[in-house]
Amino acid sequence: MQRLNSADPGFARAFARLVKDRRESDEDIARDVAGIIEEVRLRGDEAVAEFTARFDGHNLSDDNWRIAPEACREAFDTLDPALRAALELAANRIRAFHEAQRPENRDITDAKGVRMGARWSAVDGAGLYVPGGRAAYPSSLLMNAIPAKVAGVERLVVVTPTPKGMVNPLVLAAAHLAGVDEVYRVGGAQAVAALAHGTKRIAPVDVVTGPGNAWVAEAKRQLFGVVGIDMVAGPSEILIIADAKNDPVWIAADLLSQAEHDPAAQAILITEDARFADQVADLVGVEIAMLPTARVAKASWDDHGTIIVVGSLDEAPALANALAAEHVEIATDNPQALFDRIRHAGSVFLGRMTPEAVGDYVAGPNHVLPTGRRARFSSGLSVLDFMKRTSFIELGADALAAIGPAAIALAEAEGLAAHARSIELRLGI
Image (tube, rainbow, N blue to C red):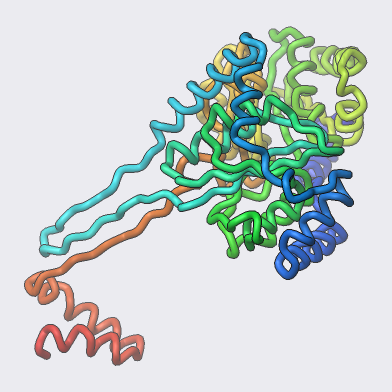
């Protein structure tokens, strides 16, 4: 764990290194992924099956590529009632939040008589990647599938790895609850390539969304343009801004809520109280020892965990904006005052009683969020990721006469005579 103090002479340099720490795929991964994508493009299902056997230890045969809808329904029906109710609560809250994101069409006629506007429509098909390696996340399936359904996507395809052939019944139950159309037992870069290029078994989609490991993220990056993507997601991040009035055990647990995701995950605490910082640091070790995910959480905390002591929490927003973290918790008396000064964050959790973990499951806003400082220019997954906007224009003779001459002048200035002539002919010039 790294400890920084904003009063130290070398703080600016050390903090700059922290900001630049990417923790993402290297050149070897990029090269390997490029090879996988090309093999799937050229050989389709055969390549997907070979990579699935190599990486997941699972042999795909004619009858086990796709998981039947009946299996998903059975998984849902046989869930423990309390767990089924929890999934339903999460789904209902996610749906309610995302329904408010649906954009409205626009159709206006201006003073010149020009009719113009924009019409929104959903993509035809979306591919949803659901992790199934280090952990399986039914919550991620809901967070991806429900916005797509709200957008009006007609075909939802889930790909999820099944290591050694093991299927997580919670993922299947979530697929049933969300109304997924197709579920395939494939994962990794080969699954993303199959969704993008299509194979005999898996028809191509228009958009691929969902988190995955470094190979999945790199495949999405390389295939952008062949298919739409939501974002290139890296390892999880949490930044906590906390004063000494917090229970240090709570803050230690919150830091580990992201550290346990991945050895490359990053957890950062900013506080103005050195004694509180010491308490949290000590309790992180205690909490790690009690976690079933201790090995991963410890690796993350040891390699990427950071505590920053500042002279005043007034310094925190500037540091948070530089980090542009995926998750930001503000555990202070007046969190809104600091939130008003934070411009770059994937999602912000306000107050001492709002742990980031509640946002991962049942709060409503999406938990698929930008990492690696991408919150500077991008947002979390939304309904809009599954939609596109088509603009339209309609002119009558009077409207063209009003604005056409200006278009002719600009076309001539750019040396595009055919542009100008197509307007001139209509105006009888």
